Image (cartoon, rainbow, N blue to C red):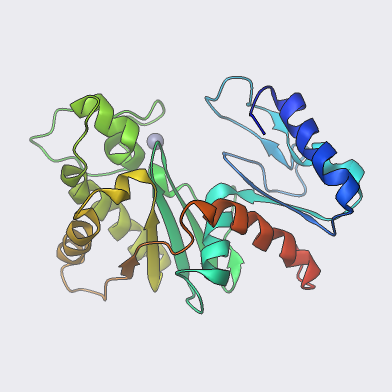
Length: 248
Ligand code: ZN
């Protein structure tokens, strides 16, 4: 269904689900979102530049269904979907990183999506700048964070409508090296439109190995297996968490 205003869009989704007598609802939502169950704004989208969608109570729109509602980031959902059915089966810790309009990452640690004070924001790690690079960066919050330097929006701002993706490999490798240093994932699936560029995955693999410089093993870098369906299958996997007896 089309995305219009929050009440109309979420209302349509709830109306669609109501007659189906669902057992649980899984929501893999763009963020940042509030995942702290003790917070008065649990289940909300908090800060987003998307017009009209900041401070929106997403979970609240589904409470009247009277079933468990599992709420997480779109990328934690995709990570869980790939972990359950795709490129991350039997791999833990596992990271899913999408490089598209924005850059976001989700992590599965001990079989569950990783939450923290908020949730991981892997696209916003600060990146050491190539001294020869004068591009200011496209992130409205940080300028030259990973998303600000290597997302599709950043590449278009730098090179126009037919952006080149290969020069982003070095910055992607620096971001992935930071993720590897902190979380030590065994495998990272790299999805999103930018990663479809020919030769980019191979170049990133090589640059990650160069950046880690043999100090520790590099995580395996692979393409996702679920493609466009990672998001929706991720939401299904989220909905299955309480049904499997786990706590959300
Ligand atoms: Zn940023």
